[in-house]
Image (tube, rainbow, N blue to C red; front, side, top):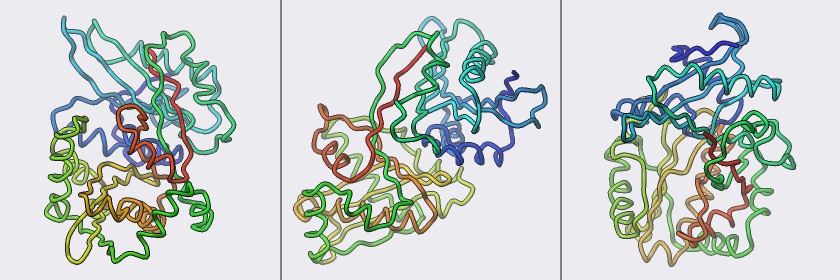
Length: 322
């Protein structure tokens, strides 16, 4: 097996990650955006033969950080992404090849936080991470996996509505009957900057972390279709903007990035209406899956309940291996 570092064939990369409904962190656009912000990233494509033109068995994308004592840490979140038909034995060989061939000086540490079950074609009953757990069984498990909620936007709208938790559906019904108006914002920075600033103030008060400043604009600029890289929605009540949500689109997948609501928006369940409308609009764009992001019932139980009630599938990753 052969590892080809920093392949320049974006089309092939995106074809494989899109086939596997890869998460945001394994998208070409994500790494390009991070690199433009000064964060080093590495990409690798795995083939059975020596030629990069051979069929790709897998891709993996790493963020690189420098730790004390000149240790370089590489972190592959949500990967590798496998082509259909790659055996567990090939997966294990691929992981070993990636670690051996990392184009970084020593000392170094490579971490994998795979999301095998996020990929298309796997039956829901398959336990998370198989057969990737076999591929990483010889590595040390350093942390348990985080959970996320995935919404299947290929399901008919009536099925998705029936899957909503009852209280969530009641709030959506009330929001739809209310005077709330949903507006689709444009793709210019000035069209969504209000939401970025409002969410930043909210984040400062609540003390949670986010991606680097400027990531949204960098992601949009790195996207092959910048006007379609984002979906930003605003909820208004009598010309008062009371809530907003922003989603990032990468191939046939999208990821919830940030949201904000004031007291008026929360009182009228604006986020229920915004997420429901976003699912409809994303599905119209051909998006097949929406990742609502991490679920943490201890640090943010309100947001966790909101995501869990949306009718999606809760997925727990297999953990971080080093």
